[in-house]
Every structure is written in C-alpha cells, then in structure tokens.
Image 1 (cartoon, one colour):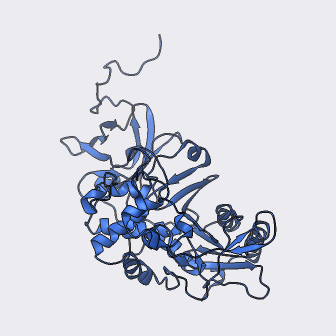
Image 2 (cartoon, one colour; image 1 turned 135 degrees about the vertical axis):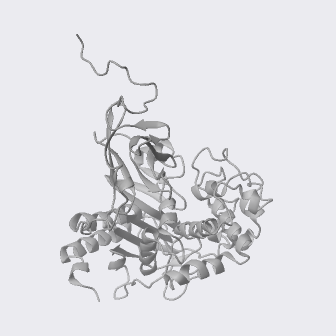
Length: 461
C-alpha cells in the first residue's frame, strides 16, 4: 500500500506529465512511456500516444537496444565474483581464436578493446542475425580499429564477444543464462529477447512530413548481447533500483558500485560534455548531479534509463520511433523535476553501536606537510579523509581486518592507509601510500621523511 509520504505531490506529477507530453508532441513520437522510481519503488508512470483511447501502460514492451549491454555486463561481473574469470584476463584465456583476444575482459566491458564500432555490412540492426552466424562474421577480417586499452571507442561487437564468453563459461545460451540468473530473480517477467504482447511496433517518422513507415524488428542472432532485449517501464524501473541497491541473489551492491565507476578514458568532447563510461554503464553529469544508466536505440525504438544515486531517483523513458525525441534530455529532466521539487529526506542520524578505541583514536585533524585534513569515522564503518580547505585529495577507506585500510576512490583508490605506532602504542603518524600524516604540521616528534629543522618554525628577522 502506498503511504502518503511515498506519493509524489500533485504538482510534481503534473510537471512530469507535462515534460513527456512536450517530448512526445515535439519529437513526433507515435508513443512515449516513462516511469520514475524513488525509495526503491516505482512512484509514477506516464504515457502519451498518437492513438486516441489506447495509451500504453507500464507493462507494454518496447525494444531497449543497448540497455541490453548493462544486463550482459551484470552476467560478466557475476562470473568474476564467482572466481571464474578476472577483469584483467585477456579474452584469449577464456575464448581463444577470436582474433581480438588481446583485449581484456575489462576492456570489452568499458569499450576500450580497440574493436570496431559495428560489424561488417550489411547494417546488423536492420538485417537478420542469420547473416552473421559465427563470431568471425561479427568481427570481420580486421576487427581492431585502435590500440587495445588506449581509448574509449564504443563497440557493439565487443559485447557480442562478452555474450559468447558467458555462453562458453556457463555452457548455455546467453538468453537462457540471462533469464535464469537475472530476469527471474529480479522479477523482470516482462523483459525478453523477443516481443511478447502487448508490445509497441517500431516506426520511422519522416523528418519533413507527418507520416510514418514501419521498421523491421530483426532477431539479432550473435549480436543479441549488444541490443536484443524488449522490456517495459515497469521492469526497467525495478532494474534501475537493483543497479543501486544490488541483490545478493544476482550481484552485490559493491560490484554494482564498481560498474558505476569511470573505467574508460574519455574523448575530448566527452570531458566537455561530462560523459564517461564504466563497466556496462554510462555516466553523465547534469550540473552538479551525477547520473548513471544507459541509452539504447534500434530502428523503430529509443530507450533511456538513468539514476541519480545521491538523490535516490531513477527515470525510464521509452519511445517507438527511430529518431526525433532526445530521450537522454527527457530522462534527465524527469530526475531533476522530482529531485528538485521533492528532495530526498535523509535518514535520521544514529550513533554507531560500538567502535574500537584504536579506530576512534584515528579520527580528527591530520596534516600532510602543511595541508590540513579531517579524518572521520562514518556511520557505515568507513574512514573518510577530507581536505579542510574544501579542495584537494579525498577518499573513503575500508578496513582490511588488520590494522590497515584500503582507499576506495580518487587518488588514494587501492592505496593502503596504515597507522604507525610508537613503542608505547600511541600513534606516531599515518602512512598513506608513503605520505606521512601527522597531528601537527611537520611534527618534530613524528617520523617525518627528511626530518624537521631543529630550529622549528620561525618568522623573518
């Protein structure tokens, strides 16, 4: 039962409806459906259509194109978490003979494998997958366009290889593995590799006239892991919640957090526009808001899923037209409307149930040379290092079960933080990847590299 505090305000709901109505009218989409999730559940659904009295609902399927890649990435991360592969493994180790085996599995997930953007002609999105029955037909004679690992170059064949990798290690078809390991556990019963009624038909709208042409809906065959899926706003809203919260039956929140981290070097234009790519997820910046998700398109369909993790708001937008509607803009606007009109109410502050004295001793002010930092013990049991000036290197650290902590982000990601103690047990300094943090700037009583001038601090006489 929806409680009053879970419901969106009438003004917010009208603003959402107005936004998709404008998008459908100006984009000349035969139909457009959208959903918003907040607090782990869908709180709004809207639809606009050119057919009177027959609006699609949250159970109507649309083709979602490259959002399929995020599902494939989840399958690969599951294999990694089970110890069946490592992201730094070259593809050749597990799937030999492709001609692209120098690329690592992480490279393929992040589109840094150097592979071509598309398969050889004819255009794979509008022709039967039976034309490309083998991986060699998908990759072509010269699959590489760039040096492996050096640049981000979006590659559909790269995700075909990942799908084949899943099949090899699981001993089953990609779609069967996907249904068994992801769709069924998450309750995504209206997501499938082939359309199931009710579903929208795909259309091309003439760019200079208000007339339409039906688009073919081909089975993509080998290319399925890159873009085959059909889904609904209801299912994708639930999937968006999973991408943040995780589900231990499918993939942990920690592994999903890893997927949301930038993994590919951005192109110059991406730096300007605030775009990056993780492991099967796109990252976009809208003002101060970071959004993660994926876009998708196939002839006749456009799709967009996005999540503002910090705002706890997700949006899904689907349309059945080849072009015309800027779904990324629409989805971003839906998130902004809800997050700005009804900001997330934070959880109540609660004290930690317990804390080790040796950990509490680390909290407080520290200096790296003359730079001042605050080290705080957070409610989730992490240490958070923040520059007191507001700018500078910062990171959170996770306890390793001994006396050390590992950095989780930024400059200190993967670096060890180690308290160094004197013979009497008191903390002399913190060693962070060889950087020494002391309680006072260049503390003369601590082990500062290079030592401290014995005459101490002075003015100019």
